[in-house]
Image (cartoon, rainbow, N blue to C red; front, side):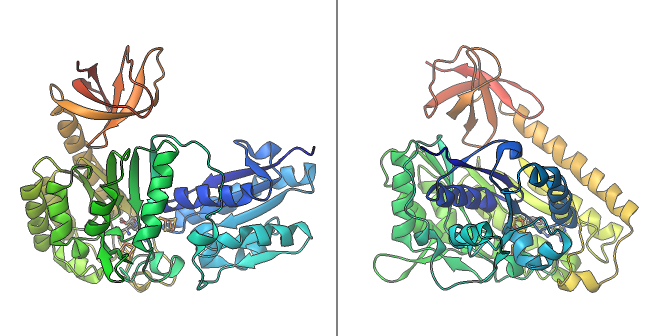
Length: 441
Ligand code: SAH
Ligand code: SF4
Ligand code: F3S
């Protein structure tokens, strides 16, 4: 019997790439590959890449350079680039780095086995089409391996919003939703394999409008209510949402749907209307704040999370102050802030850039405020009882780690809960990035 070939996948970028990497590993499983955690013993290396900021894209080339000696040691090693850099740069990647045998875009990775076979014949293989066929369906035949308690499930891809700074509409293409039944079937299959919590993914997940069993388009809220019926599934989350697609039925689901968790990632990017307009966000700071009021009226304990860009072209100190004001008003449990990065081909790339040192300074000030809120919100959890879905053993003997409904990591010592159990925990302390407590009852 020949030993299986080994596949090393490294994933950059967002959760959709994490999901895609799992699917690519499964597709290659059908070709006799098993996953390895080290590139050194791999027969194939796949980088699943991100193009969102300049640094993310540059990382790919420095990483590829580090594989040079591996190819000298093992001439049969094949190197592939997948994901959003693959989509954005295509053939250019092979020109810049001749080590690369295969380039596959995010919409065509179901063709990976064919591309790998082509690369094995010594030819370069490239596919960055946006094909008509459903990549998810093509990848259905997969091994029924047991899974951990949490899983991502992509329900929507692509974006039609064209924010002036963002490459996603170009790398992931137009908005597409998967049909309801396919999502439900996949969720049931995940539950059969041990999953207790699914996070529904999409670049604009709340714009979901998949075809329902009745032939009409279903909203994300309706999909969530359908998933809520699945026995054995205990928690539902979704990410990332756009403020303009936050409909009343979805807000109502946050108050009424028992399995939908009280956590919402709702990026706003800036608190200045002038900048929001230039970003082509088509909402204002005021409309965003009103929306959050409405969401909190429906679910008062909801934990908000967001994304911010500082140093967007033409951003003044006054614009930045407006962002700080908005953050102060919302108080995010988590927030991710980035320095604006010029992306070739996007409208904002042509405009007057903010001084880099100034942008760094703003980023630091914003992050300090966000960290303070984050810490205060965590500390407010002390003394409260939360529900924890246990995911894995902690570093200390007898310790288990899981996530609360608010997505805080929670450590419990002397814990008799098993992986996948949902248990009440009384919070006793807050550390910088996690909480700790004791099982109740
Ligand atoms: N679809 C999601 C996420 C898009 S990418 C949304 O609309 O919110 C994730 C985050 O990266 C964005 O929310 C934004 O804050 C950041 N981002 C995107 N393009 C960027 C750029 N050119 N420079 C810096 N940050 C960027
Ligand atoms: Fe990018 Fe804007 Fe689309 Fe989000 S909504 S993926 S930031 S273009
Ligand atoms: Fe990056 Fe592509 Fe996701 S650019 S953030 S991997 S959609």
